[in-house]
Image 1 (cartoon, rainbow, N blue to C red):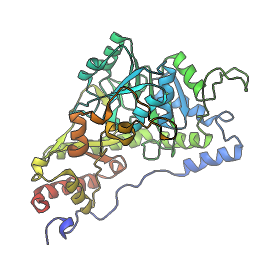
Image 2: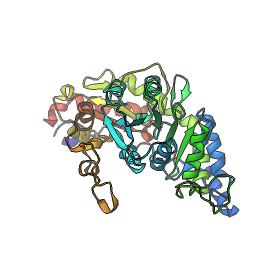
Image 3: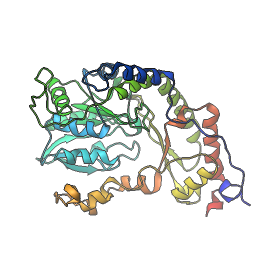
Image 4: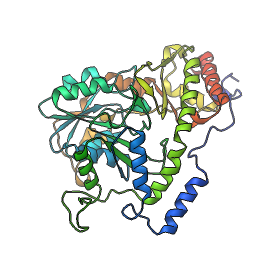
Length: 408
């Protein structure tokens, strides 16, 4: 029998970590109010409108437009910013597929570039080399809640007259140089999907400081209507992407407790950082004083197999799970290696649409290293736990590291 639980030893932990979602009577009260009001849709009630205003104000933005998902938010934001058929949009290759498909749905072409391995955000040094006469936008992803370098990105955008659409799906309340993300560019998009730190099952929001972008985003999400127009009068090509009052009620309750929960995540992330940096084979992402707040949707670190007897990441994660500590491998394949991208089945009923990008032969080395070898995610819900919970994570990593020869 070995020392590690995967080999028959006693696990570090048997108790569960913090469950998700977190809710209380406030969500139930809000939902009951909506049901009893009979005003279940956004066009009749006030819950969504009130949340839009609150969320926008919290993020230093003038306008907020709620929609039915973060994916929808990205697609509408691109169109509202004037990006469409044949335009190129630069984005990272290490992100959720919606970042790219939003561009495709808007008629644009996603141009994927590599990430900075010290931040896991878009490598700003590679942006200008990928700008062509067709480039119309940059889509930085504030990955895991960590803000991208918005100073550098906005400087490039100004120089080349480009729009910046922030994919802030994981970055509620994150701040760059003291200003919240989401309205640092042309527009920013957040998600309220069920795994997210602010959660209504589904939903999203577009933030912007630009009145014209807000006008089009609101119209596109409401069947092409205008706020003061006749109900059956449609000015632009839109759809029904509205958020329900049920979601608005849940989000009001969720967001009311968010600042306190975010502070807990940050405290626990700092505790993890303090101890993990002392473990051989664990490499933390680089600190940046310009990141003045991080939502900590993910705590990401880089697994260096050399410190674990060259044991592959997958085997390390299996050993951690046996110790009672689940950690995620994150994205298992690069965005450009998704079957959708390689086969270009972008059309109706899976029809191939041959855009002039060879995704099948693309190679972004840092993205591939993150996917296959290095990226380890601690998801947000355990970060709401106790100090003992964090110490158990640390103890489990140390144990696996010290006995990694058992995994050979």
